[in-house]
Length: 82
Image (cartoon, rainbow, N blue to C red; front, side, top):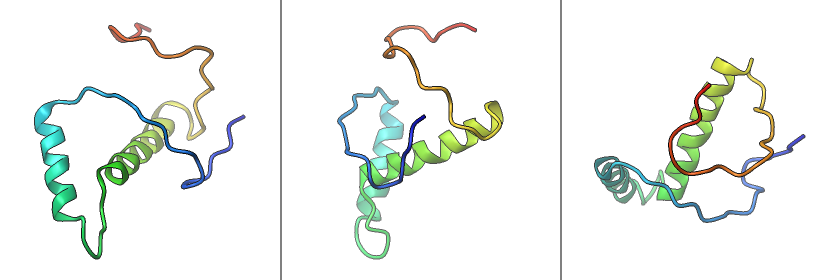
């Protein structure tokens, strides 16, 4: 069982590939909203987006529950077929 409290986890670096237009739009928003009152950072934007999407996926596919902990690391390449 995983216990997670927002803001208490250590941060780790992740490498992701995104469409360049999406990343540029996110960077533009971050620069525009970096000051008061939003004080947005690119990390905060991505964290919030991941959390929102994970909540949606849990509701849609797993009765609102956490997904089972994986037994192995993700592998690159094509998505896993069901």
